[in-house]
Length: 367
Image (cartoon, rainbow, N blue to C red; front, side, top):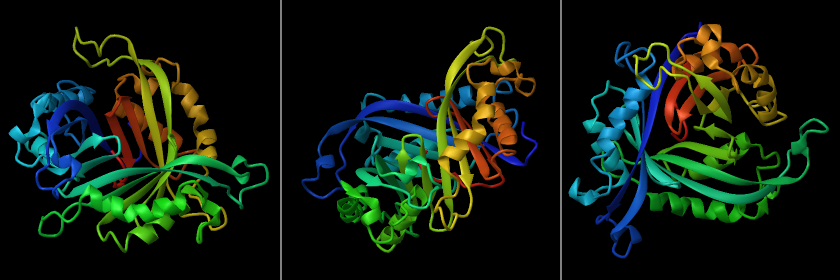
């Protein structure tokens, strides 16, 4: 594992199909009618040594624990399981049934655009995803940089906000998020970001700050603003700190040497891993970014080439083959080239894997 002081959190994800109606909403609200979703439950949890049947088996057991509880909701009318099956209440219902150590973070996604999560202290948040189509260019980049020419993106923004007040009473719903977002959407969609006051240099980081300044007065419970510049990179702002991430996939073979005989994990197999590198740094006053996404990709490429289309378990320090060890190795190797790196997410299948962070990094942004 990494020689740096790190923290490992294991992740699992499981889906279920179910119907519900939310009776507490105003009369005529579409969600008050009987309807259905393809829900996704996601959890993150630090686990003690020895919790899994074998070292490296944490992801497999955690996924099994979650799937067993999600099965109780699959293809059912949720109102028969709990009286008001909102995303928040579903997350609490599932968390209360999981036999896991304290500090579990659990989210329920009801559509690709919305969901809720409980943080490690049990506090609830709602999130909603919005899309807009905009042009922009970055005026201060070096000559020849591709972002120095006018171009555009299908941007996405995810807003996270606390769902209850200090007494625990509901203080926010997804409609509230829609209401405060709507005026900003009108300014951003089908326009040029550079033309908006305060966005002369519209990097993802500055855009996240610009949105925070306009949303926070109307959303006192705002937790983070996440900007997806593309599907593989973006920035998160929590009112104080800017963080960016770069996502990529790598295809590799692996075997878990500690898995018991007869387990598929002990046999040679493979994954298309999803890898996210997270970096935090003060914004460059001229360029307006923490780190150039292109620089992250270039600096990381020598490490990427050691893993992609390779038998990972044959690397000397990765003989155990498990996802947490691989993620820790990436942290240790990559910080030599990217000192701003403070977190690596590695998923062997969607939502199932490990997060290794340097120090006590908050797991901000979407699950």
